[in-house]
Figure 1 (cartoon, rainbow, N blue to C red):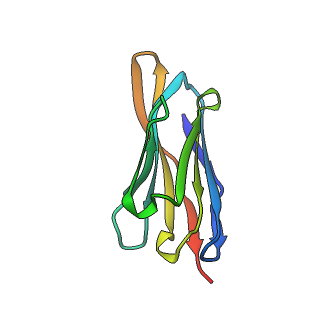
Figure 2: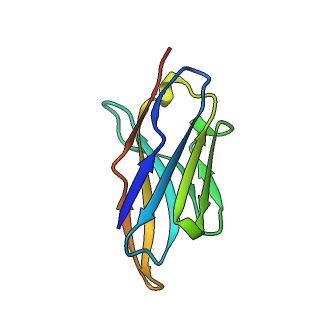
Length: 119
């Protein structure tokens, strides 16, 4: 199984980006999927998560600016990021609880995508 991310880049403060992550390979389905980020010299932190039934959670720093969503048919998760600020600069990682069968789950990470917010 691979989690393939896309959508990162350079954006000015106040701008927007949409990250995508698609699980491919031996995928029966997915339980909770999430986005993490890691800034230079800092620990990786959970940004947002979404359950299979689309219940969501966000870190306080992004509430009201970021929206996580998913498409279960595509085994995909998205992160819409609005009003981006320099402190959002980080490598963003997709994380998925991937089902290989109804009763077998394994956790996977994407390779990371760089988001840089700078004028």
